[in-house]
Length: 288
Image (cartoon, rainbow, N blue to C red; front, side):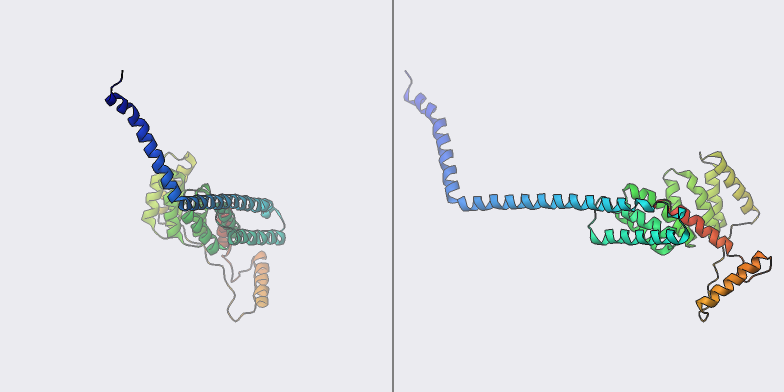
């Protein structure tokens, strides 16, 4: 037969549980409005977050779709010149509209890359450089930024900003892509820094780059040793401020005709600049 003390021990857990239940009931009754309000707030937050995520998904899909519509502008250079320019201009406007109308999404870096390539292809170097720099600054870890870095280098070189271009190429070379040392050396030469160019070519010659690149580096080292540095191409001659566009065009046509006949012309020497610009446009605009 259980003693009174044993019976008391048996009832203690039941009494403790009952006490907890009673206190919980009292708490809920006393704070029922606060609890209901908290639940309502949580539900509203959930709905808002869900709506935001759905909208972001829709906007992202729309941005990718609009970017995909520009796929037809991938090779405008295969079109007649006037038509190619019109295609590029329309694509540039579309890219800018996407960036202005829609918030940042996973497609935004690729829109910037497309825009930079189109601007470079039009030889609008300053705007192209600004676009590539924005992409690299805002989305440094993106695949689009990785593609944009060499394009930015080529754009800076096309602008005649050889020191900046050499520094940008050097960053690529420091990432294990030693073939960019050839570009570093070239830009150092164009900037007039023979010693820095020599160091770049020597580093390329000592690297594991392909044999043909090392041979080019050795050739440039020989030229530098002889004091024969690469020189920047001359600036294309621009019309005088008081010269009308029609007169400038007429003079250019006359100069071209004179050159074709072997006569001297006052605009000779611009071919190097044109060739450099076209080459840089192809390098910088390869992503578009």
